[in-house]
Image (tube, rainbow, N blue to C red; front, side, top):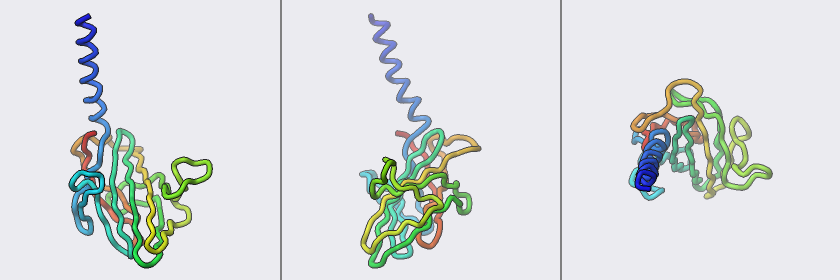
Length: 168
């Protein structure tokens, strides 16, 4: 009985340690045009970008296969159009999918597909939520502490934002 309980306790400690080694949060790194703010309750967990009459708050997650960013766009006094392209900028990874999660899309729980389609249009003083995925086809998987640069769509083009991989 004691051996069985010890084995269960050992497995309980091993499993979370394994899962943290191959997925977690992406912490943004401050840089030109990128400020850090708190939107998820942790200091500096969100990259804030501003340009072309819009503010974008960007958070991210990573796993052993991909990186995903969630962007909350807020428009100013004029409507804004943002092209969602699969191209990257500089050393940024190339996006493989983008979804407008603002409104439900018939037959698709994720949202309306955006990548290389019609641009995202945000009404004056409106908001939109977008999810973008970057899938790795080559190269090593991220590990805790690694840096990755991802392309964030803005009205004036793609902006590279560097993130550091953290644990769960």
